Amino acid sequence: MHATASIIVNENHDPNICVDLIEALNNLIPSGIWRHDKMDGNADSHIKSAILGPGETVPVKDGRLYLGRWQSVMLAELDGPRQRAIAVTVIGD
Image (tube, rainbow, N blue to C red; front, side, top):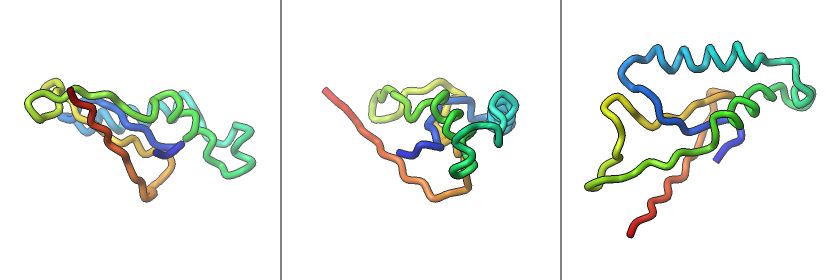
């Protein structure tokens, strides 16, 4: 529900995965060089969020998220720390 945060599914066993992801995004999309930065200095966060996407579709089986052994749903905070709210929609048969 925010333009500078994303929901992703990724590995949850090694915390370095999250650090590596943010570092890779920072290397690919540097801050301080975009037109929007003249307004509020967070254009890179908007671009990163647009690439990662605002949400995920995750199947549910037997009342539980149906993910791989090492997978987890995560909030990627790209412009914070900030207070964030998320929305969860469950669609069933």
